[in-house]
Image (cartoon, rainbow, N blue to C red; front, side, top):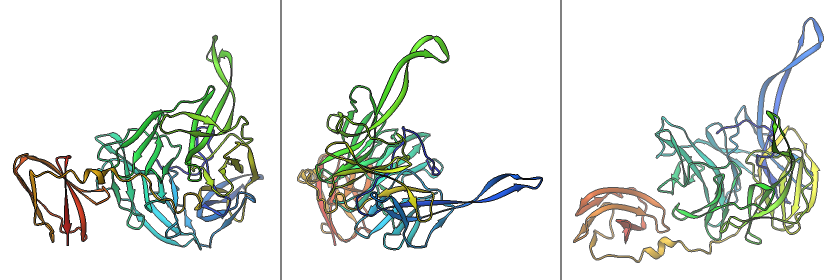
Length: 442
């Protein structure tokens, strides 16, 4: 899952930017030239080291400027995501195994911590992919990918970038595969969207359950949709749409058989309706570009100019959200670097507030007289006493529905729960997945 910086072809994802300064990681490789002692005209280069640092750019000038003088040396960049926390003004990305926080003002490294998922088996593979900062609850969400008996599963999770602790929200896997084409969040509906290669999957940020799962439907001759970016200006998911131009010709391995051959490809700005999976092209004109992009670096939207920005590995390109026409395009140039990746903007969706209320709060009124909780309030432990229905499961949740503890039993009539370490406040106790009671910790 950890990939060194490389330019890939059309199947891969891109870089985004906003009209103002956009922050990302710039890399520079250093080499030593070795000459043949018998013939000085023959030489080759040996890679010495690579440094990465925070940088910023403006897509109208394409000048990539270093932010401060601090850098990380020989750190492998994990191309599964980056994000900007607009609350504390930090840029966050994952390296070889650590999550790094860099200050936007001067590039200072505020923290570098190991990621830790308490539910992952330490002897099997686990990752944290496609993470995004959600403006409406100031939380970083992503997919916790982990093996269980050799089988991969993906779980919606949140991460604390200061401690590196990953907290899974989904109680079951939301799918075995994810397409490394990025992800996005609708902050108003509190839904995290990603592609599993077949459909657009929406995950409820409140409880980690599948909110929607629709098969992606392409217009004729279009084949791929990636680099999702949610526009808070018009509540639409944008991305890059691939169109293939084909002809009929002989199979190179079996000349007697005619097959469909791909002659060329073009990129278009597109949209997707996550409720139906329908992908549409914005306008009829292809984007004039190299038809290449960088893996999983995302697209970005400037809500002021209403433009979608990406990098085709040669130029920064801005495309009108209204017409699909290119509004700006210029070649990269660097203060001191070779490649600018994982860049993000901090203007789109700032200040967004959720509209869809946590459905868990509606269930919180489902009290049952079959169960009695005492003491309530409590300073720590409390007991659940059943007068009729056996106790099979207990979940302790925050008031907004996030699961803190889970316990399973076999036909118990009373059980004691230990919550000594919980902060003071109101919590919801979910008994047998259908009965909800409030417990106060003081």
